[in-house]
Image (tube, chains in turn green, cyan, yellow):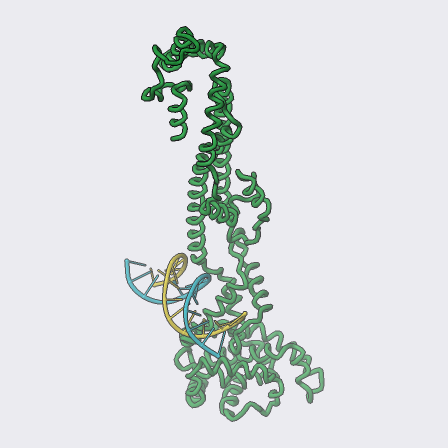
Length: 469
DNA sequence: AAGAATGATTAATA
DNA sequence: TATTAATCATTCTT
């Protein structure tokens, strides 16, 4: 406000804010060298000036009275016009030295971020028209699932606080502005105040308030950032899947051990199944991505330490074997009703993978039964292929829970193993294997079971000894 | 409380 | 782009 002081200096203390003028040569009441108007008038002016100067020392009522007196003074119009003139001459400098509001880049950043985070969203347009327009432009970012509900709740809380604060500031700003406007209007009766000046005043006020708003925005941004990081951390937090979900996944994994890479659709289905069985009310639905994670982890961990998973594998193999038994039995019945020369047709209407898998399960089941577990269980691969040949025996699996038919299974197993030679079994089941699954099989199994090299030699022995028990 | 299990994340890879 | 391998961070088990 240097200019203001300057103006006051130049005005010679005629302004109402007299006290600031003390230092100037403003108040020489007695003598003036302008003889044209006479001493009386000079005295008069001096009095007036003096009154003005001391106006702040007076009580309010007194001041009001004096003010009124001044307003009604006959000299007032003349003084006023002088002031106007002076002001006009100094006005340029005032105007020139001021203004140009650069759109604060930081504020823009904050605004953008708040918008992006949905804090400055549709609810209640913000302060400036720009913000409001942008706010309406930014649609509704309602995309995420229930997982994010907590985050969203907190965010909306922040947003609510932000908006109420913003509104409060705005209201205060408006109040203050109108107050100042009134003051200026009031003063405009005694001193010339251009609309430009009022505008300037208002903009100054607005700037002040917007700097306060910026602080608000800044702290809101901070809050959002914190919330965000917490959320990300929370996302990192894990919740164990339900037992049922794990079971479903394991079932699939072990029944597709030859190629445990579920297709996208399969993943979706698994995710759906797992989510359904969760049934824990809120939260914890299992997504496709989670299924992918699970399989990724499972594959790598299984591969890393097959022995450790043997028990589990057997368990699930048994489980699926029981399930498969029915299907197999049905299939067998089908094939039997068909001409025995074309047993394939009956099977293949199922799906090749299924056959392979169930066979493989039986295999693991069997070996586990006979080898006890872990260490000696080394031949999943070589055995796998052949075991599926057993399907035609179908009915023997009906009682898969060990029992009399175990012997027959052992026999077939031994038979199969002894025939390490080939994929073509005398049972003719060979044709049932789609080359596709075979290839896939080899890929994963080769990669993961170095022990398989040992198995053929070791396998028969262990089985043998076990069967003898 | 220590260690295992486990879901998620990340960089590298093909 | 999907997968692997390593790793992180939490949860479960002992």
